[in-house]
Image (tube, rainbow, N blue to C red):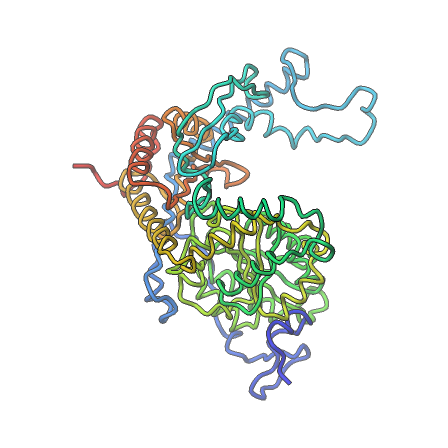
Length: 553
């Protein structure tokens, strides 16, 4: 009897056994299989990657797959390293002054009577926080006092001790164009169908559930939501969770354990990394979106097996994301699925940023490439972006979901999703599917695609270095130098544009960036206003590094 892929996943079936009657070695592997005869190729990140993989991969792609990662200019890289070096030198000088009481120390320190104890605060680990991060801390954690829609209101704050503490001035900055929230389809709103449905649900159920799904927290609205999610994804079954981060970190340990191998993209989200570590599995990392690197790890795993014993791995699980939120790149899913089938591995796809934002029907990266959802063993996503809500889901075969219902820590121990949040997801998802009797969902999907194409093209034409895929609503604009991280965020806010700036350790040390998130709620006038401000600040801070700048007529 042949077991399904899900049952093999749960039972730890060994990978790539003998086929076609060929003789196997001691571990049950085919020595002369064609995959062992392929030559290894060294991975090199190209200076600029513009990929037309529809031609290169024998019809795996139905349309051109274009991503660009322009190389960092040499002078900019040198100046960036010099900037961090200067900051580090001045950081040690200030630490010296703090140590001798010439400068007041604001950081947490051990009390005198506890000096002989094991230290709670590692001085070296806090060096970056107190000497580099504090200089630009005002760019983060800004209080919002409105709906985080296309425009928002910010509470004005001031600092008198160089960003160690803040105080509110009592003023509100009105109508700031929001270019940072993950509000891809514009469902983060306090009026309309979603808001009205959530209000009615609050009156009926209240806000809190106060119990886990296994006890008194399983409401009819939760089961309705899970049935809808399964239908939306095109899978047999689905289950939902109250927190997106925990959907990854608490479910991966239920799927893999000791004796299993996890192959993880080097730019995977922290929740995937934490889940892999908590599982106790062996973890190996492949280069971002590089299929040669992934195939080499798969081939080595099949050939060599587990360390020391060389026994076959119980499971090989590939972890990838749909859209990578710091790079703006889209996973090469057709190639990943081809490798997964070739080497009999299992695929865990995190669609946190891609669900609702990609594909003709908004069903994520699987829909974007026109693939069969059954080719993805575990489909994961969150409701915090395109649906304007909270929580996450996992979809797949019924056997898989039934297994997770009894083995997932997120189900057994966590409080159930709040009913108004569940209703927000149901209403927005039905709108995307067109089940609300309107074309609003399709209009928002079309608007998001148009805004993304327009925004990316304008930035590239201005001369900025933009990372990622042409169809990704996550748009990273490269800043590079540490001093420009804070300057860009402050200058944009002066022009009433709210942005997100990101630096080390969230990115490589020389690849600091501003990250824009395009929304269907943005009008063309809003985008033009933001683009004009970005161009103005780009000229002010000399950020137009691209060698492919199109001169203005």
